[in-house]
Each structure stands twice: as C-alpha cells, then as structure tokens.
Amino acid sequence: MDEKILNLKNQLSADLSEIKNLVDLDKIRVAYLGKKGSVTGLLKGMKDLSHEERKEFGKKVNQLKNAVANAIEEKTEALKKAEIQSEIASMPKFDITTPVDLTRGSYHPITLVQRQCEEIFRSMGFTVEDYSEVVTDYECFESLNIPKHHPARDMQDTYYLENGQLLKSQTSAAQNAILKKYGKNLIEKDIPIRAIFPGRCFRNEATDACHENTFFQMEGVMVDKDISISNLIYFMKTMLSQVFQKDIKVRLRPGFFPFVEPGFELDISCLICGGEGCASCKHSGWLELCPCGMIHPEVLKEGGIDSEKYTGFAFGLGLTRLAMMKYGIKDIRDLNSGSLKSLSQFTDDK
Ligand code: FA5
Image 1 (spheres, rainbow, N blue to C red):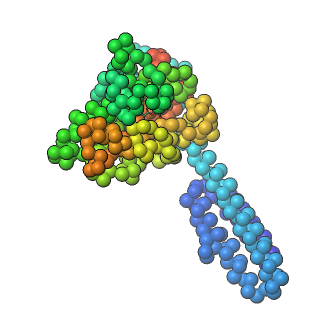
Image 2 (tube, helix red, strand yellow):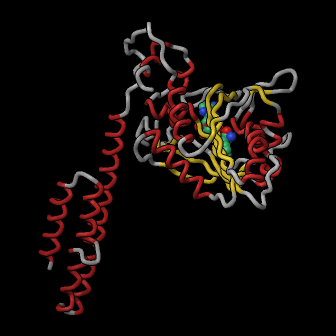
Image 3 (cartoon, helix red, strand yellow):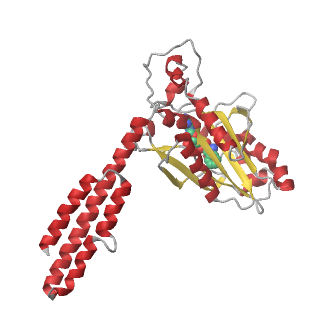
C-alpha cells in the first residue's frame, strides 16, 4: 500500500510538470481527487486490511490527499501568474521616449477609450448625452441625496465660482437632468431610460500616479420596471470584456454613495503590475474603476420618477483610469501633460 502511495506521488509530480494551462490542470484535479480519482481509489483497498492497518493507512491517504491538493493549488497559482504576465506582455507598451512623427496630430488616449465605450453602449440601446462642466450645487449634490454639510461632500471638494456654481466633481451631476429629460418617455410610452454621459470632472485633489485634479468619468443610468443588480453586473461585464477584448478579473465590494442603495465599488485587477501592487494601483493590486449601484428612491423621486413602480442602476466609470489600464500608462499625470511626443503614440489606434 505504501508503495502505491509513493507511486501516486511520483506520478503526480510527472503529470503536473507537463501541465501548461488551467483547463488541463482541472482534469488532473478530477483524475486524482474526484469521486473516481486515484487518491479516492486507494481507499477502496482498505477493506482487506486489519483495524490497525486501516487506521494507519487512512491517515496516510489523508496526508496524501492534502499533499495532492496543495501541489495542485501551487500549480494553479503559478499558472495564473504566468497567464497575467503574458497578458501584460501582450499589452501595448507606452513609452514616453518613443520617437514619433510630430507632423501628424493624434487622438488623445482618453478620446479613444471614450469613443469605444460610447460605441459599446450605443450598441446596447443607450443614448450618449453631453453635459456642462460648470454646474449648480443642486445638480452636483442636493439632487443626489447629498444635502448641505453632508460628510460625503468631503470626498469631492472642488472648485467654486464666485456665483456659487462649481466645476462638477462627478458626472453624476447630470443624473437629475437625464431622469427629467427621459422620464416622460418612460412613464407615458414605457420606453426605458438608457443613457451614458461622459465628461470632465474636477477635484481639489493631491495628485499622485492614479489621482489627477482633472479627469474623465463616464456615467451611465438605466431605469425601467424590474431593473436589478443582475442587469447592472451584465452591463459592466459586457463593457469591460469589449474594451479589453478579453475577460478581466473584477471584484465587487460594498461601497457607500448617498445616491445609490445598495452601492458597490467595482475594481479591476491592476493590468500594469498584474495584481502584484505598484504605484498605479496604490500597491493594492486592484484599481477602483467603476463605482455603481441601484439608484436611491429619493434620487428617482427628485427626478420625477415613481420609485414604487420603477427601479434603475447607475455607474460612474473612471474613464481616465480605463485609458491607463488599456494602454499600460503607469502615471495618470502623463495624460494631462500635453506632451505630443508621448500622446501621439496612439495615432493609429482608433
Ligand atoms: C463617484 O464619483 C460617483 N459619482 C460614482 C458613482 C456613480 C457611484 C453612480 C454610484 C453610482 P468616485 O469618487 O469613487 O465616485 O469616482 C468614480 C471613479 O472616478 C473612481 O473609481 C476613479 O476611477 C475615478 N476617479 C475618482 N477620482 C479620481 C481622480 N482624482 N483622478 C482620476 N480618476 C478619479
């Protein structure tokens, strides 16, 4: 019996060394640990053993089971790491020193990503809206369930004009106007509200590799009867997989915004460092990209929509950060640098 255990261990090492992808690794897991797997199979021979031998052998099989599970887990981690590294290697490289032809103009990377997102959402029936950069306190905060002196305002200190207006700190500032603009169609003609509104935002912010005082977001709202979190997740996943042309590792965690309930933070695994931690992701391996949630009943009400009858979701995609991830730009400040030399690398990518 001991020999069988030893043979299995050797066989496992040989099998694992051949494995190059996660799908084949899963087949190995089933072959060893599945119901009909070879480790489970060892237990079948136990009925011929004495009570003492059975006890001893059972212990050894359990140890083997743990050793096999650990070896497979280690291999899984190694394969995942290798996959991420190859994804990073296949990303376009942003090189500030690349010599370029400055006689040609080029689209800014944020414009390219914004247009791509617009295309994706248009194909899913969303309209694309434009909104001003100077807004009122009501638009940016009060209509969003953030009354004067609410602590949520501290996170979004912005630049105020002498007349009391402000440079919008979030594209959510357009939510109320969009609800009012399309609410009539929803109520009278049963046409769902589906709109995105990209725009420049401003915050009185200490800048670093992933924070700018001027950056782009893209807001999206959908309101209809029976809209749920599943709809929200579907649209977020579709958008990300189309922007990156592959499945991206995302995580959803609870997040607080007074204008949604429940609210979430949607993070993506940092594509600059492959999730290991770097300055672009504040060394966490994750990048906050797209907070979202179900629109708060108070916000619907403020937009003239009956919250008993209709529900909706909203999201606030960080477009500038999306451009960083898509093009492998490590420092957000390069995007506002105005350096034609670095930005023109994207000329041919439309
Ligand atoms: C908001 O601005 C909310 N309005 C988002 C929202 C919309 C929530 C709808 C729920 C429903 P937040 O402050 O986290 O949330 O910013 C949203 C995204 O904008 C961030 O995830 C990030 O990608 C980007 N962002 C925020 N601040 C900066 C900054 N200083 N520099 C660059 N990107 C930023």
